[in-house]
Length: 441
Image (cartoon, rainbow, N blue to C red; front, side, top):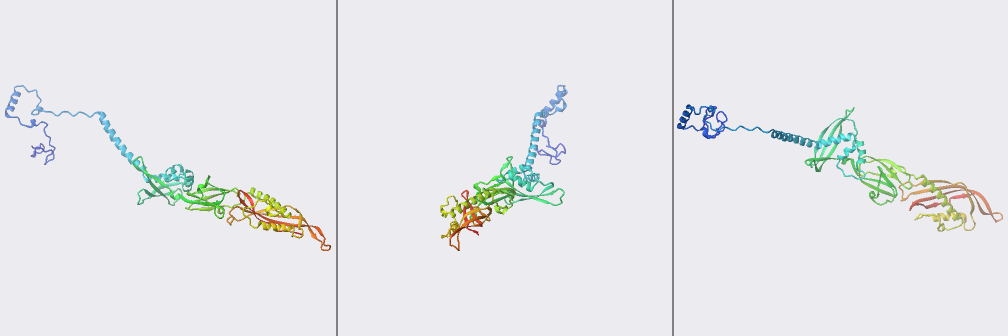
């Protein structure tokens, strides 16, 4: 077989010419390539000259088979092919965009802009945290207000660091504030969730652990109620018994690092309201460090009246030489110091055992004052001291040195007494007295 283009001799099965590279077109019917026998050739020529086959087109000469014409592709097929191609392109573009949308860099930028805009609702949804009483959306609002709401002019991701564990990333964003030439930096940590986003992509969540502080404690006097950011601490936060100074320790496992409004109430002391900033793990703050503890006015007034009443019971009992244990209307503490001994001294003022002493005492107006022992002493319960002072007129029996007869003498005197009270079992009771300090003339 020869190449029709250059005449190069070729093998029968050649597809391209080895000399010029021309494509070899093989005949569709092998019989058309074979030369006619001489007899057939002559017969054919004779028939043609005899006018029997003169109407046959010359281009069919020597060729028995003609290739069938190719059918046109239907329009619907073309449309479906184009549709498949378009869908494939769209799917590729959509996949690329979703991968970019779920990337850690994009999550970091989104959280940064949301924080700086002060939008705590959307920012909170990006966090990887376990909620508690003081780690929730409401307390997170104060965190956003502390670190965000800046007037950003521009920003970019400065650095992305992947640790040995591929499920965490540290991203540093540098930014500028309008009308400020200083560069600022915002560091963000991301954790890869165990779940997937849109079935295929990593789900990155913001780790805001730097803004969560742990084991925050507050120490307050027993029977106090503590409210932080409007939430009252219940007994589950108490971590231990009342100490020797009468304090109870509350410990909160974790809190957002921000400023909280704290309110401490007590049935005896005035309310204590103060802001407290949580900046470090293990913060411990005490009631007396933050605000002065003072007795409620109504409690003070109650104790003043009670001191007057108790004084009269003691005075009348001593003037009648009644024993201390027989003073039934007097409420005393479960433990007493030397009250009975001090009461005996008052009894002696009315009688020295041989001659009667002072009698017919008429007190003027009492002056009453209270003082509280410094918090933090050995008193494990609230303690208050009531001072009573007054002038009085009195009469007493005295032996006439000339005649030796007993006669009544009138005079004046000054009196001061100290009555100490503690709060026990829901009421104020006497714990100590000093009532024999008076003189008359």
